[in-house]
Length: 284
Length: 282
Image 1 (cartoon, rainbow over the protein chains, first blue to last red):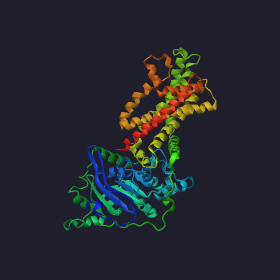
Image 2: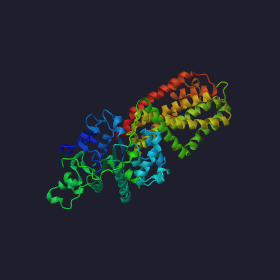
Image 3: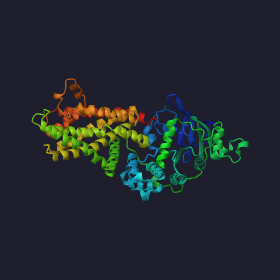
Image 4: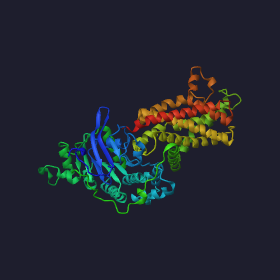
């Protein structure tokens, strides 16, 4: 139960994402220390852990931003170490920072990504409209992104990722810093998009309640390693009987991390905390 | 817990065709120009939304031409043969304005890295070289707008320039190449120093030396002996010489000027592309 590799997955389908023994170190610091993941096509997979647990490093390795040896990651069967462009074509990525270009309108932001993914001119405008509509921004599409609220920027980024029809949508802390209403709105749109497209979603978060409510399957990450894998129900059921009553994912995390709660388990250095705060401040 | 369960929220029966239909992605030689056009459109859109940069950037060349140029023309302090000093100076100011835009392009890249924009771009099917070349080309597009502003100002001040459309096209090509080189130089430094503060310091430290060791303000022949070899390895010199040849008909080796600029730009794109992943390595 400690890692995904301990499981034998019987699906005959090619996994949307397969990670095997992924290791990545920043100088002496081993940010990711041998993780295994297997994400089924069409599922919402959560990578859950405190700041600095290694989630973003893992995402960066999967998204081709970090150089990794061949054989560690496969996205729909493609190895980013061998076929970087092929992997990128199948990805939609929303990084942790608010990455929409503030100097452009919402529509221009999305259209730019449509061009970068070679969406043909004949369908580009319609596809951009549909992506904006899917995240509820069609009415404000021609306003500057700088006038959007934090939640709207997040939805705009979702539209940017969607316009290329990705097979795997990767969201790195998509609701960080948002107020509860905006968080709900972002998740509502993610769920609607998934319902409309059936695409696979890999999401990192340190909000236990979100992971519990929205993810089909969760990996709990702590100190660069995956401590437990399963559906929210399975993870709670895996607790010893004495701890299971009214247990939440927070209790599961505490159990598998050796007692640390999410709040105490902030593992990142000053840079992680600064980055998280910067995003949160920009969202407000 | 051994089997990956089916998704709890199953996809709707009618998948949204527009959002699910994947399109063939460009490969081969056409990727570079396509991405350059896409990213250039972004830069032009930004300029359209906020023109204040164009207006504010017009002040400095105006001062150089109207104050420095007019004064030095009157006192005949710099030997430029039969060419009035203001005419001699105008191409130098075009090159200088373009360089001043480009040399701080690395700061923009670092800002985009910090904002997540670069990170996201680097996860699109855009080769690093295309990303760098596109940024360089975009800085060239900005420099072209700046060059047009300076040309209009120079014409208003009575500079005797050519209006031959082919030569003016050549001017724009040289401006794009020169600007592209300096933008890549700046992005390369950004890839080494990684932070805005350091790059600001280095940018300020190299901008003026590049300007003063070029032939923008005075001929190489009047420079001290030790400075002349430095001037001859400064790409800004070749940019100024090329512009001067096309605009006011100065004698120069135009193919050499173009060759040096094109070669420097290609080399700079290669170096900046190599260093670009350092920016997002974290």
